[in-house]
Image 1 (tube, rainbow, N blue to C red):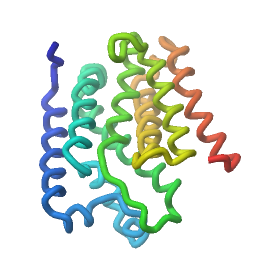
Image 2 (cartoon, rainbow, N blue to C red):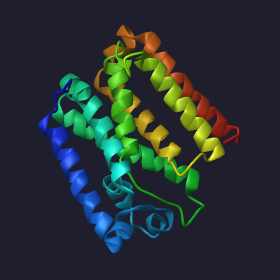
Image 3 (cartoon, one colour):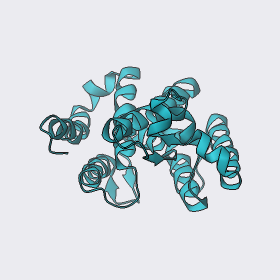
Image 4 (cartoon, rainbow, N blue to C red):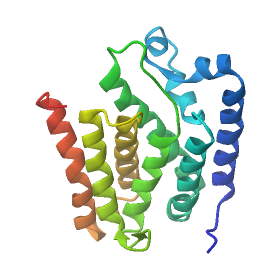
Length: 212
């Protein structure tokens, strides 16, 4: 089965691949534009944005772009090209901003990847198409809740070399931006909206209590 793909999605995938391949071959370029706490704190705020177009290796790049390929069209067809691009960028920045909040005192902390942006697109597509089934068997909203609950677990326990905080921040940004663009979802799918909000509330309560 082939999924339709919009030109704007092709453009994002192409740009990300070009920049990622440049980073694979040029370590100086990679270090210059990756997400790095020390670099950001000395005024290089562009890293919040540019790091989303770099990847560690081919597998990292492939997983993110494949996920984007599967879910982008739902957002594009529902909100339009311009809104899709804005949502993608807001999610990218939202993911890196939350990562910054968690790691601002770790001066050598670095990260790369489009995972935050892709998480925002994934969460947006679940809101826009709540009847979707992930892997053909998991309801979208169940997958979304499980994804964020696992991200909370990953943040708290620092599981693997994965930016769980960026995933979570991107999903939250995608969730909020989608509801701003189409507030009718709140009226039409209140259970889905509330269900997806629960893990978001849990994370911020844990942060407020100093438990995470």
